[in-house]
Image (tube, rainbow, N blue to C red; front, side, top):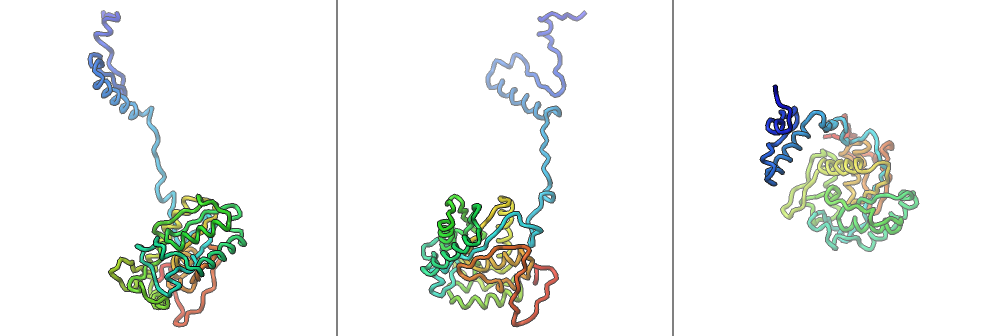
Length: 296
């Protein structure tokens, strides 16, 4: 007959039940070994079916990714081009991102006045009546424009969110330092193919195609549509191409013709996904595109 006395139980402890761990009693006197067995016991408990925690995550396809043109927009967007820069006042192309935060890349006196008019226009449109977020490029002139807009519309500086790369001015490669009129040559190439790049240059200035800009602004919209919901966002760009490509993409238009949606310095537009703007009739030909905005 087996003894059921306490001494017998201590000498012959019952086997542990499944899913538990019991260290030998003679090892518990060592603090290091004790901690080791505590960690082991915890790991077994966490692995036990009765204590398991569901970590199921919806697949990416279920969450969805932002696509151009979007089925809908979660937020209301205003597109603003910063006023004229000091370089633009001299009639010079300046798109090298190395100098984008330089004081020399800031607003000219004329550009400040253009930006004030843009800020007043936003106020008249009621853009920030219920508050809004300002998303300017970190480029000097765009950030200065955002500060002017914030001041006139009574927006706290905490609502200015600088964007560090997706809103950089389009890199024009070998056209860097040339006269502003040369941009018409770039737009002529754009009208042939959205993948045509300006000639490269060795000073670090990117040479971006329309397709490259399209990727950047699509990434920006993906962030904004994920981060905010039913908010008002004012996008402030240092140049026109970011905004014209963005507008064409959101509205499902032919990206080769983005220049026909050109933004002048200090221009403001409400981005309406349901409103298709009237294109200027191209002088060269009638475009045919079966899968906008990817038209080669």
